[in-house]
Picture 1 (cartoon, rainbow, N blue to C red):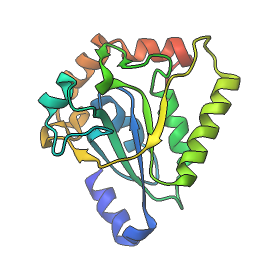
Picture 2: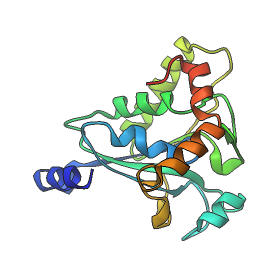
Picture 3: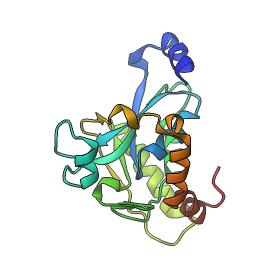
Picture 4: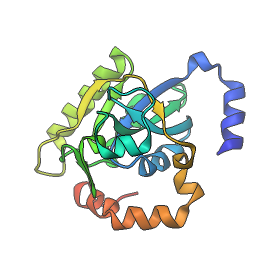
Amino acid sequence: MMVTMMAMTSHVQASELEHATFAAGCFWCMEHPFDELPGVISTTSGYTGGHKDHPTYEEVSAGGTGHAESVDVLFDPKIISYQQLLSVYWRNSDPTTPNRQFCDVGTQYRPAIFYHNETQKKLAEASKHALEQNKPFAAPIVTEIVAAGRFWPAEEYHQNFYLKNPLRYKFYRYNCGRDQRLEQLWGEHK
């Protein structure tokens, strides 16, 4: 990924890139689906939506900062659209559980789309509305759509965790029931 990222950023001006920020439980599990997409320059695990500056993992996971574990996606909108990112987000989240995603419980694991501008807000709201009209499950959608605040990158050991610690990552993901629940909600997961 690093070689691809460097090659892509050398051809793209930083001003042409955009950010998308999503929360759907453990940030380890949200990097991988976006990293695979053409047009995604990078993903960063971190914290947003809270009130504490420079939060640590221990503080956020304890639930006292107001932040959600989230992933910031840097992307080239000429290659991949925000709508496509929204589609990947929905398929990798459980939009039916407030303050919980899979085995992770608390406001720090709430499902949320953090928009960076009015266009993203409108597109996120439209995608949520379309999902409400056509969802494959009966439960209501509780995913928040809120303005993005300051994003605080998580500690380095959290970044690209699925690549650095693949066995631990797979063990966690399986034992948390993430893929099993995603299949229940959305059908066979790709």
